[in-house]
Image (cartoon, rainbow, N blue to C red; front, side, top):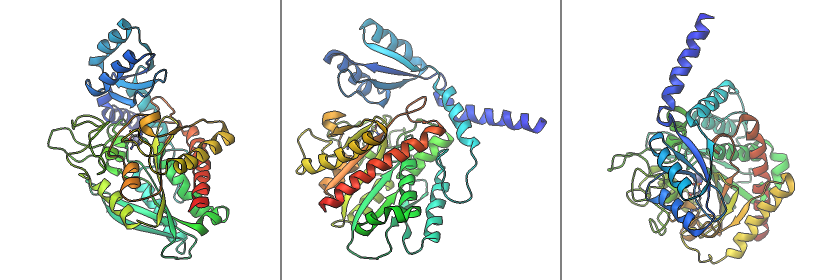
Length: 415
Ligand code: 0X9
Ligand code: ZN
């Protein structure tokens, strides 16, 4: 009993330490009803640098912002004075995150396979990839493709039907470029599990295409969200400006820095000191260039907001094969809606979400020449949007797989 109390106290101390930075933080949902109100939100984003968990996009669509104790009076009085619609979505972020951490830690990890009843740590994810390579040596290959800034090994898993055709078409899938979006690596792991372990069911897809999959693009950030700061988004490399970290999805060299980015290293959407300043974005770049000509479908998994997005993000002008992109994206959205009723919005980020340059999707399309490039924003859940409860993980990732499969079928019908 004594030891249990001691361990309990120890856990509490560690947990308080973990989220010390979010002590007293609140989350507000704000819905702009006219252009003036939208402008106010954009100012909060750009000028005040508040952490938007879900950025302002369109009129009458709610956005979500997390605000520390010292700014809460300011935001509440400004919104009240100007009669902008808002609700407090979470009035004690650190408490709910600590609760989530306890819940996530309760589930013991399996000695074999992968579980979708909790979120996995980076080492467990890599161990699962290695395990699959041992279990299915003819169909699965794991490669060390480079190290993160803090020295973590990024691994791709290539899944095929074992035919070893050198010029076979390829589908690339990645997740976790944004550290706090834990459901993204989970969804990518589910895809890996289905393709590798449920091979008989997915044989037809693998006859036509090989898959190259990188489940966690930004492992330093991912681990940091597990051990220190749950809401961290960026990489972890220090910058010359004091604040560490770059937004990986603003760091690719295509119209880099032109729109929807921050030049300030302390902001969540910092574009980086130069394009490809981050080892993690360099790794994705190099792997995609290696697949040039073979890769037909690039898919990035993010959270949250239920969007299936395709280039261009940097401009509202349509991309050269916008019709094909829309066809693939719509196939995914229709399949999900038919299966579970969950609705996704489909379109160019610059039109249905917000414009932002330097994203991997635009780069993969515009530079690596991959004809179908899609970013999927999975549904939000839990007390911040980024933390589905254990019982929600499997429903979200299995529903996502239905959409991904429908998009794959559409790609196969085209290339
Ligand atoms: O802003 C992003 O990077 C993505 N949204 S998130 O809320 N997960 O941060 C959207 C990416 C869409 N594509 C580009 N902006 N290139
Ligand atoms: Zn993201």
